[in-house]
Length: 429
Image (cartoon, rainbow, N blue to C red; front, side, top):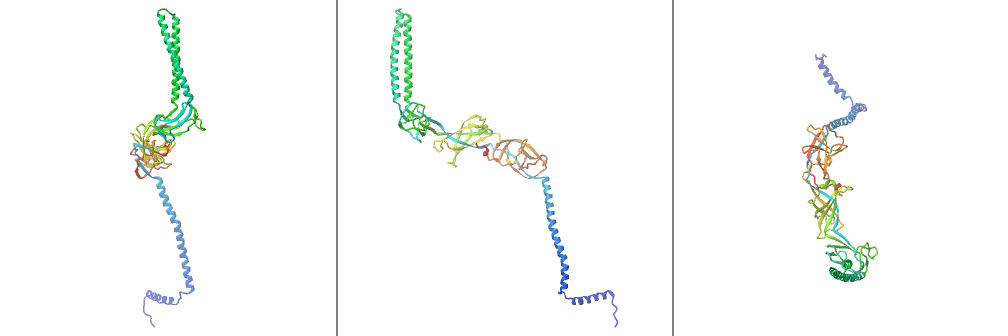
């Protein structure tokens, strides 16, 4: 049979096409040999995938760490800082100081004459007026001494009268040369001696009369009786201890409570701002919502060398009896200054060996270190007397390692909040 003339390429393609179906048709892909070949082909692919995954796990963190390190280096090269602008400090500052409430007048009443308590009229808590009788002292011996002294006075008066008339007659007779000059002078001297004896007797009567007047124990001022140490029949001695066992010597104790004194110790830094016109009020634990108006009465005008404080007396009207002597109170003093300086938060301060310093960002965004002088203390804020100006950009919370000339980047600028004016805890005495 004769084969047609077909090109060779076409013949090959035709032959291949005819052979492939025949080959696939003759192979069973479900045989174990075929599956084994597939597994051998998939194993390298799986290993390649695992290697790629492990490589990815190891490289990606390193790339991320490298990127973070680069950013950190860049940030440390020019650290980000937050700055605050100084503001004018408040003209008024409240200074809180502890104080003890004391009576305006306080006295212990003692006996000025010896005797027995005949009667007492006031007990503890009694309100008395000036000159009111507190107790009567019975002094029979003193009364007898007064009677004797008055009799001696009368005798001295009679002797003086007789000596005076005799001296007068002898002076008259001396003018007519009836008596000698020496006898006349003798009578005159006798009269003078009798006059001196009379004055001594009168002084003794006055002394005993004064002692008898002390038989009535009276109140020296308006006040409240806080102690009574005697009872009827108790023996009391002038200026000594009464007869009751354990008695300290005073009969009564009286305190003036319609007006009270409070003594406070003002720190040396604030002493110059406390004057007689300083506004002040008191608070106590018994009345948490009440303020007691008071006045600065006087001060010692001298700093105590031991405590470095100024002793100040504050007076308060207590006619309603709300405050009691001996209580604890807090004094709120409004300190005024006519030329307040600038203030900054305490967090902006750097404490260096050469003094207190602040870090200021200059116009070229480089750090400048300025030494400052601290004035008043407001707690979280302090007054800066010298060293900064209102336009300065002061770094808040600067690091201890910050140095002058270091380049920084400003995150934000905030104005320093005005200080509240409350006293710091270090100022509470």
